[in-house]
Amino acid sequence: ERWAYAIDAAVPAEGVRAAILAAGYVLVEEAAAEPDGTSRAAVARYEARTDREDPDVLVTLRRQDLGLTLLQAHGATTPDRLAPILETTGFAPQSRLLRQAYDVGNDEARRALTALAHMVVAWDDDWADLFLLHLASPDPIVRHDAVLATAVAALSAREREPACTLLEEAARHEKFPKLRQTVAEALAAVQSLPLPSPAASP
Image (cartoon, rainbow, N blue to C red; front, side):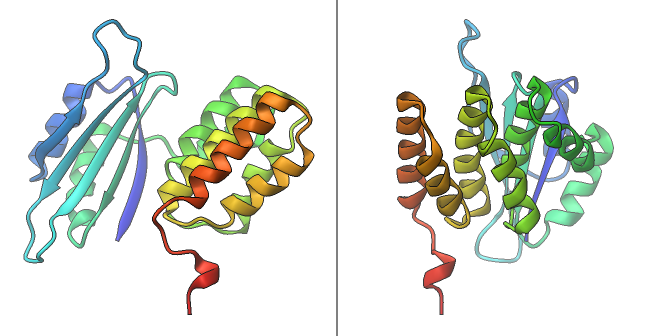
């Protein structure tokens, strides 16, 4: 009961919000970007009451640097609510982002990987291979962004693995001291996530 989409940032934030409110959600929390433009993100959390005890939740993250508004939602009535929102706002096809991400070595690939990291709801071999491709790049800037994206993907998927394994492998091969430190910090952050480890599950 979890869904993730990316909406083109050309759709105004007000338009995205209006579509969400029209679908029956209520704004419950917001962290706006800094007025001077120093913040790259603005987050909003919405809830919709259902016949269940817990409400359906929708969170938007506006990333001007990626040219996208990232959306994650979960709950039983989410599909019915998301359909009219996406009909109004449109969305960036994941297939397009994947094509860009596989073209490792350019800025579009790095941005696409970061966007996709927010959209990982369940890891599989294809996801792991894509992140590994970036983590193994000869370009340290690409590797840096891939390390951060891997940590984001672990949080998005609510799974420590295979992110821990990917980062451990990256740490073994990293030669740049500062980047090795970044890998270590990302690995520690993933390991400390309050999430069940699939390896420890019965």
